[in-house]
Length: 105
Image (cartoon, rainbow, N blue to C red):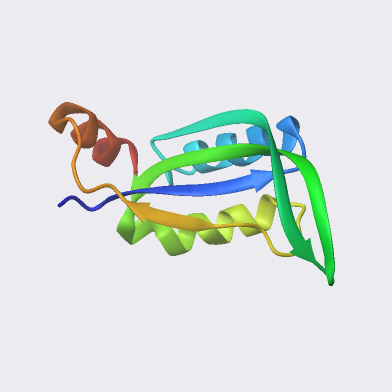
């Protein structure tokens, strides 16, 4: 088991996703953020079923940085309640995991 995690968030536009990605990497809260999309999300919001096009940020960081990374995401995110979910990385290439650790503070 490692202390590495992946955080995922989604945004309505590519520009917002890229803004969040750059912010996290600049602050060394993430070693890498991959921006992908567009995707289609279906969810319930304000008692209505919604479908919208979104962009995904897949954020590579360490468990101990989750709270700071989540706060930075909320700071830059246009959504009232952004998706911010973390998944543990249970294994990975040793060199990549070392690089992730060195790039985050």
